[in-house]
Image (cartoon, rainbow, N blue to C red):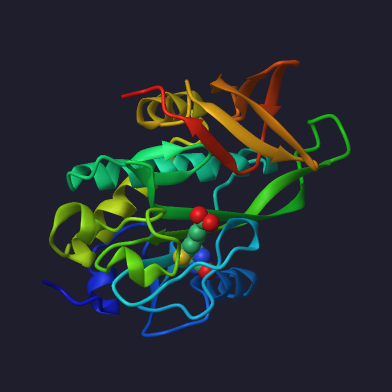
Length: 272
Ligand code: BTN
């Protein structure tokens, strides 16, 4: 089984690993990749660390990142309008789910982008974008500028070759590949597959309908009763479907509400 090494990651020849930094330990690959992006790092710059001491998740939460996991952040520079950036998080979830399923792990996506196995989280995704105004061709009407994505830092935290109790989360909340499969996976092969699927999904980001169709086939939220905190209020309802931009359509007592972000809690399982 291969140890992670920079040379081996570069030898994958993935368009998402054209420049690679591999750390034994770092605060957060997300912070490092963002620093590199601000310095002009190109699309496909990949930062991986065997351990993170300050890993962070969505909503400012801590992300336990001991040895054995795959902790990585990618610099992406998709040539798209600013509003397309929001799609990346769900596209990445589809890519990661496909890679996990190739390993025989029945991963499902909890809206918007958590990867769960039997209700336990196995992978978290954090996509943070930077947008800017760029001049548009003179023949276009308007201000002469449009908001476009400058870069996206896509963080993936995959609980791989470690025990769930090493993650520092309450029992039953998280799982790992080791615990699902009963053996340790080759991290280089896993990375090859992840990068392949992420690159595929990023390559069709403008065809978001197709990505959402795959998302629906992999989801574990639609058809469930969920609770969500929004603007200081608690909403409860049935997760009906996704809208065209991946927003969750929640049927509440007061009608259908569109959720573009947030953390949902699934109340009752209706799918077997
Ligand atoms: C979530 O809250 O579900 C997202 C977790 C994202 C964790 C990954 S691990 C690699 C990268 N570095 C970080 O500090 N966070 C992301």
